[in-house]
Length: 107
Image (cartoon, rainbow, N blue to C red; front, side):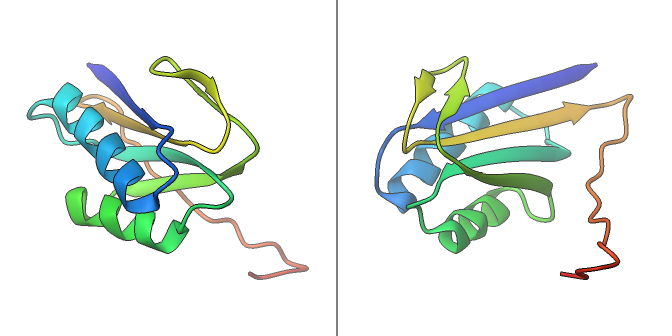
């Protein structure tokens, strides 16, 4: 089975927004443990804090993401200056993230 849940907050406070998003996701997940996530965050958020909070709830999750100029989800539709987290789980598909180094710029 393949399961995807979405959390989306338009709260401008980083801690409040990430807690809201995590609460939405946890509620929809029930007892399912996600294997990976995709995070879209407006540029003005405190990204290190958001990542720390996500890791405290889902330790070691493979997470990719980026800053955005607008975020879209099935929860709030299109928003600007918001935070969106998509969590993916599956009992049949292995999900991993990987950073491929650029030979010209290894960082």
